[in-house]
Length: 413
Image (cartoon, rainbow, N blue to C red):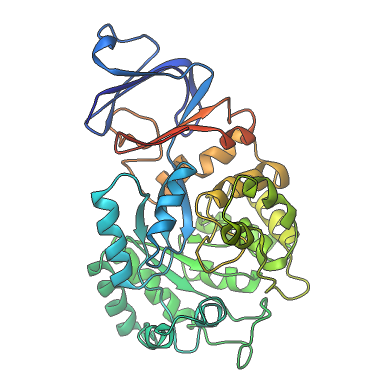
């Protein structure tokens, strides 16, 4: 692997701009040196002139569903997303995708929750029956999901997921009350508070984070009371003081997934058009510009924007995640991260630096990804070179010059 020097470049380290004209040396897949001075032996390296550009850490999407879609991981890289967090997947599929990612740098790396902590007839069976109805093996897989009905099963579930390679645990607190889906009845089954607490405690005993799906204020409060470390969607109801106080009390984070919420409600859909402009494949473009339209009246993307604005103002950590998958209309690997960050800046009052941090250092910190998410000596050289300055204008992310994973340049302008 060649030694590379990215020279004369603005450096955003994941938290702040640390240099307006710096130099980053990459060797053996790691960041070896960060300096304001050109190394004296620069002629020995492959030198990339970053004049007029900004170097940022590889972006991370904290909520995706890869399933067994290798194209998803390849596409993510084109948008500078070098790591994704897979929030529910069949163990064998995740293991297969992880094996590929371990052997290739031209696909995004992934960490997974493995199978979520499901109950019989509960979430997410209904959404998959809608979006993956043509999959002949779907019902067989659903029948094999966990059915966690007591504390002993909770312990066994967490231990099994950890052995399968899961990095964290995903809870499901979905009663169906926000969704216009053909449920047999509402509310749909969810684990009791006692069982959710048991799952969280088992996760923590195994040194694993526990995060939870929840779309309503009631459900958010339920899993926060169970002790989860984070919520994987923002609520779709107007925020209230109880929500803010619960987040502050527990120090939980939120992954808003505004990109998929906009698709689910059908609102603000025009904001995706600028991110789909360069797509030439008609089917891909239609998928990205489509809408799920599955939210019931009163559950709105604008409520989600209010939730994010208020929680951010209250000091709650916001982590960038999109819920992207090949099955969910209105999403696209990588591109939805750009859309999500644009919504943070243009709908939720983030500065561009705050938005970029939500997709880099904030995720690194909360998910304990100590080898990535920042430009720092000794870290993995997962890097994105952007023309212009996305720390001043988030739209600059549109012009990616290069993407490196493990020190190998795998995307060029």
